[in-house]
Length: 492
Ligand SMILES: [Zn+2]
Image 1 (cartoon, rainbow, N blue to C red):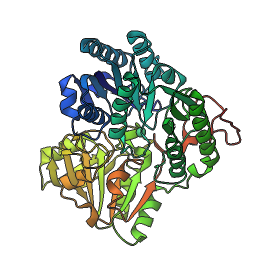
Image 2 (image 1 turned 30 degrees about the horizontal axis):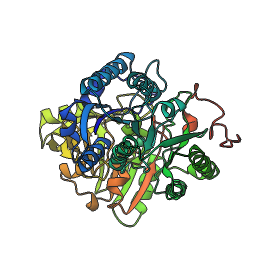
Image 3 (image 1 turned 180 degrees about the horizontal axis):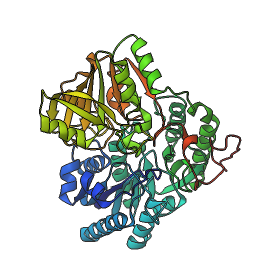
């Protein structure tokens, strides 16, 4: 048996002012053929799981094309055309295959394509015909559409946020594809969309913990292949944004429908608990200093590069600098200019910096200060977090600056903080710190929860704030909760 594998992944935040161009994909990942195997073998990624399952099952893999970019604004027409051309070119070059397994995100938006994945899968289906199994993995933040469900044979979404199970879903995709090809599985998929915007919430916390348990209950029943509550991606302004449930039954479409509608009703009833009280940055720092135990991790959810925010916001950093407490660190802020300045000055120098706040005013103004250059690195390490373990990370030239009593890491690449390794790289041992502040919404939990005495979330104006009412939505299909708080909904 021969299966083609590939990846196209971007989470698009249409509130970002700039278009996402091709160079942002090329900078993160733009790989063909055996280069994909080299990059993903033994990595806890979707493709890593696909490759491992194929090895285990004796399936020949045809690696085609893989690309991803850090979440950002709408993908330019030119970039999307280049991605399609690379993917379809590589698929044709791969020759005849029994099935195709693709890792897609599900919240991609391009100019002229609000539903990037639906559009891509439609083109793929037209190309390969109606019978070739196309098994697709999706991110939990997919805005799943009827188009995607129509053209894919099966959509398998990660169950966890943080997405620690990407590798497992990748492996499942190949296993399911094999069973379909061998005539041992006949997936019947049902998609129930829920007019609901989910503020970023970890699946280890209520109410999504219980929603996931309900899904696992359905999966334990005979004949149900998969049942997943999909959060959707609310930080974008397109008509199809929604939460959803994808249920896949073997043979019987009615069973898939029953499972999907049951979980949709359950999630809808539980929705009130998704709206949480949040702390402003100064209050989060004050509470952290008052808590017993260390470290207290403060995550700046409103400036999460993993959801399209600029990563150079200064609201939380400013609050930390004002508190000026010992054993506190911030890692990291994206500021290529300041990193270059520190590298030019050298370790041991004191420089006058204008740090962060350069992308816009919403995320805060630049911090003007003296900074002591403690150390300099190339920003490279191997990820150890359960999310993506084994992947090569490259944050570009980095600097550890000391501003007052606070250690501040500065990167040259925009990315959320997923891993304590970046602190270790700069000589900071996270468990010894009183406060560790970072930019991420939930993914940091996979690496930091085992170390943290407490976790506090700081929210402020930003492109990934939990305050969804602050976004100027114009195109979202209404009514939608919580924007239309009094609306009613029934899944059937
Ligand atoms: Zn996600």
